[in-house]
Length: 165
Image 1 (tube, helix red, strand yellow):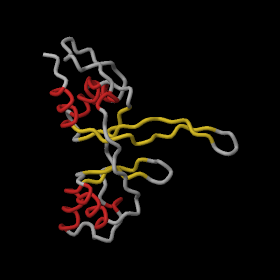
Image 2: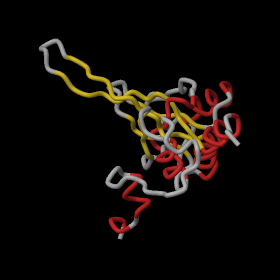
Image 3: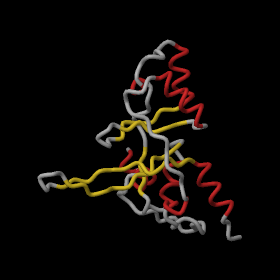
Image 4: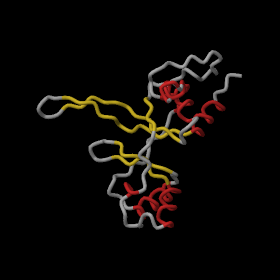
């Protein structure tokens, strides 16, 4: 059961990681990775345009975010191309037809240790920052802003550049 799986419990914030011999970078915050702002696609972008944008900008993946700020998922160049070539999607279809809607989110204040645990199972994590927003009538709500996309390569690059050994 996932509730008896320590990695799942840590990844989902139900348990603090109690690893005894943590590497020097384990408790450093995700914000120290200095991620660049991500390329974000709106859900109505076509598969063909998404492929063109990703190739033109040199990205392999991009979050798909509704104008309301809701994170719908992640589109990858390889999955989009594979879906179109196999016939399960058309070039004219919106990217929402080919997105991964199972993804992990991590905050800027979370530790690189938590990120490392996520990246053991996932190819990437979407870095989010929660922001309080107010409506015209004075009511407020929390909105998640996509701050970046982080991969194992980003973590490895940070560790190797800053290795204290």
